[in-house]
Length: 351
Image (cartoon, rainbow, N blue to C red):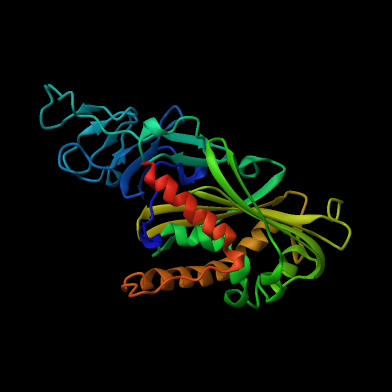
């Protein structure tokens, strides 16, 4: 399967943050080419179903939540309860309602501040759970999420981008990147956590002069630094950076962040990208102590993300051309990328 067409259906993907789904609101998502409608019920449970009304394929996400908590289709007024069962048909008030008039549900899990859905075969879930994101709903951490960013590229290109920081030079030169960053050696770990195949890169460097944006974010110019990138499942990558003056890692001078990237495939050539910065609540933004470090970082990070989006969309466009003998040449630093490709081949073949 070409990278440009890669899609794993049997995985947990983030539909959004818990706070995105307020009671009384209807939400439409397309995840792994599956149209979905989501809404939070009166009992605070989120329902997720196929977005098509069983009558005439009208998207239910264009409908509304009624006073009784049911979802009403905007076209002919069919109403569905929290279990997806049609409970009213205005044009035939005396019934009967066909037994087949019910929506197809999708498995859902609301956990640690994120709402996850499984677009594939429910029978393949087994012991697989959404990855842990404990910082998002922990009072000891400040959390600042981005809006949802559409990217016209296959989501695997973003995953490879996140695990390969050698692109920080030249793509991000002058903000989070420089040439020396590309030369930091990396250790790689592959493991299975909560039923998910995880691929992690670990980079440790001492007496490192940080790029300008990281100095603004974390306040130190010359540091010892631990930097990890962990694809926790096909829908989430966790990045952690810890810095401190030389010899001070692990002390009170330690500063850093945990950054979650949700990469949710819309289809085989489009994705939805969201980043969620988390910093210790005691750490405040140097230029404005009324702001958390997470808020300060989140204000400047979109510049970095736009550079990545530009590159990913350029890459995707090149898959439209016949290879005609073209082959990518992997580099020594591509170990994580090659592991991702091997894993995705196995996951797609298992469907």
